[in-house]
Image (cartoon, rainbow, N blue to C red):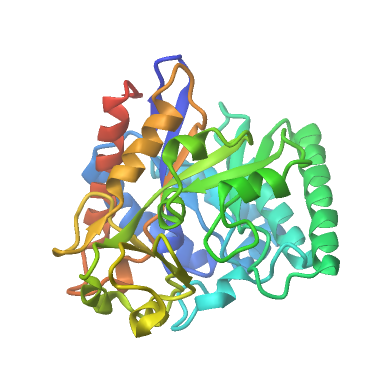
Length: 370
């Protein structure tokens, strides 16, 4: 969806398709004509924005077969959908039975991460609507923190230089500027916005910046205003909510301790890499916990648990409530619908409700749907 900011610029709102398990092109076409088409209908949207996730296999297939890429572009137009941003964080196998730490591989020390990301940039440049010249890709925050060495840091620095050069050359060749956003996440080398400012200080700011994930910031107890003023280009905002347990209520989190995804858990005085470790005594129960478990934006979990939706509202205000937007791409990214406790949800209805919640928050800031 496109919205007009009070300053006249266009802001794009999308939902991230990493919620779908499709790893190949037939699966992607199926999700577009199935759930995504229902989401658009439920919203009554003229254009549905998609934050497209392409596995390594699907991306390689599109690059190897230009006809398939042209066909995907045509299919999006027929369905009333557009792609201005890609989620380049998961490489493949994002819906396998156990993902956990594997989601951080290959990292930015690996030439394969560079190759895959530049391939995604080529695809996005081809998929952008004719009236747009800028797209964005979100990616992992360099690497998971363990195993970080001087040699790995040097390899990362070299690859960041190469990806910036590749994006510059792509812009010169196609007229399309693709910007890459590194996504701070608890437990990673770039865990906080302060670390991002330090580690990306010398990055090419025309093409490299950060992707702020609201869930990650909330888990790290980062204030929204501070995150908005970090001094780096904010390539994209991922609208997401973390799970929160007030002091003494942590037993209620047991239902969310599931085996597929990593759920970093934080209190003001400590952290664990996964929720199960926290529940086993890794964090003090007399403090508030926040859990990296993306929960629906529009709906609270059963009491006493709650979400960090107030933090997300503050972040939206900080980024989009001023005289000019600090980011123009917003991606709703609740990829955990299929591992939420309880009865399986109607996925299309849930995604539509999240997008509607987000556009109402943006309308309250003065943005109008186009």
